[in-house]
Amino acid sequence: MFDFITGSLPSLVERTLDEFDAMLELASEMFGAATRLILDGKAPGKDLEEQEARLKEHGCRILNMTLPPASASSGREILLSPLLLSVVRDVECCGALASRIAGMPALAGSPRSGSHHARLRTIRDRAHLLFPSTRTAFLLADAPRALLVMEEHLSLRRRSAVVIHSLASSAGPPANQALVLAKTARLMLRISRHLSNIAAHSTTPSVRMRYAHWNASLLFGGLGA
Image (tube, rainbow, N blue to C red):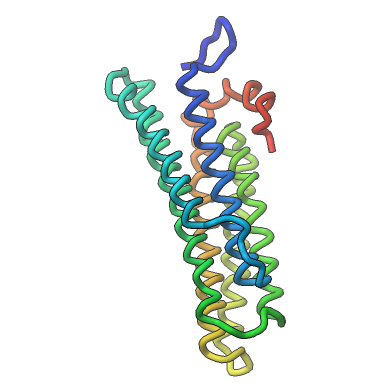
């Protein structure tokens, strides 16, 4: 797939990566907007339903570009198709989960303050940082970065468990607020898991070999976050 004479990326690969990059950036924006709404009371600046529709459009374009060439290609090119199917699905899930988070405030009218919100904001901030790290890990086949993403997901699991346990205690907030906050923690953790799934592809030797030749072009294209 890589042109070893000119050192350039095939145009189809470039377009596919551009679409994936746009998907991940859009999902990151949706996550930020949704969690600011539930945790900070700040209304999203954009329509999240419209953004989710755009996310799916990017995914469809990737599949339309990938599946027909792959079906007519030999084994090396076909290997890329299941990988893209998987990561597209993961990013789409991130967007869908962000939309669900945005619906949580309607179920809780209490002020967005206190120790539980502070802990959830910490989880939110750390989970949000996984988007650029996942982007770099996947697009640049950066295995060490991918492992950091996966380790951070495990750390967020532990942090989320502490928050949920605290919410369930007798000293916790009212039941409906506790339920909303616990669901928010779980939704953020599911987004983290999908990002970890994407990054994990870069820890396998076959994927590292496939993407290693793209490294310089992606860096100069501004993808090395």
